[in-house]
Image 1 (tube, rainbow, N blue to C red):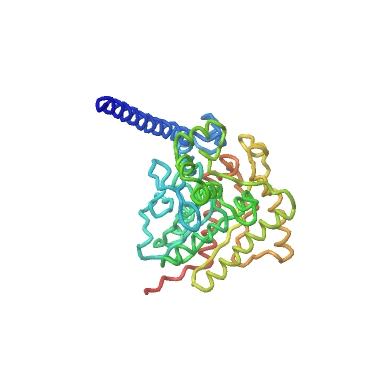
Image 2: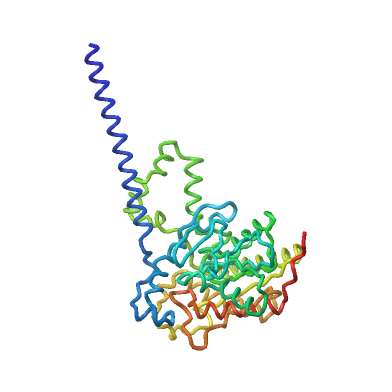
Length: 386
């Protein structure tokens, strides 16, 4: 009897061990497959020929921008961050870098938030962060170059652009820095495109679906379902079943009516009014930039590579939103103090966009120099010692 019990116990133990090893192997394999799926080039990022790269970037070195494009999609790799819901994942590449402090360096000189001297913080979405261009070719990098050329050699310009951020998240991001005792001399907010991409009031970010799923799992689901929700095997099964949320983190919405468009305008306008009050009370300069978009005052026939409305997706919302804002500005009902209206700005000769909505290096340089001119005109006071 004892011998039979030992054999049964041994068989059960071996079976259990095999099951555990099998589950562990399945989880490891599923994690590896998901990593490949998440690291694969997104479908919305087109593949260009060398000739098209040369035209889009105005370059005789298409290989460089092919490398940049390969790295640049890492902008979609984000991690949780309190209040703003997510931030850029720290990453060190050849052309694309995100520091542990959450900014993209300009690759002109070492940057340090703790270093004494005047500072410019630039907030925005992926157009500000610089999708498709090198660290040194972003709008904030162009601002820094122009300020240094104007003699402001002690000024550091920090690129706090984050993929898919819109005005609400950017405002909160600045508030978090301010409450931590990190105050800029100038804060620049480059907005318009992403506010209309997220045509949803009350606000929802691109992480909304993920956070809803996570909190629902913790608060309502049995333990076994919560464990399953965290399983790589289950995630892989969802991915293979067509659930794009497993690998794609960006969620927008179409404006269905003029009331929807007006709601987005009110959100952006209200956030700008709040920022203006913060700047006035806390003592820093504020520049609110209405950024150029390809669906307003831009002839898309100029594009060197054609782009369809279907490719623009939710970014097509700006086609309805920008004329409404322009009309409100003309009527005096739009907040215009500290507003730098660049909606009609575009390069005279160079190509403007390297993909559906992101600016070329030449256009980034024009936008950056225009903002720098405004900063110089305002004057940056010497920082007072505490």
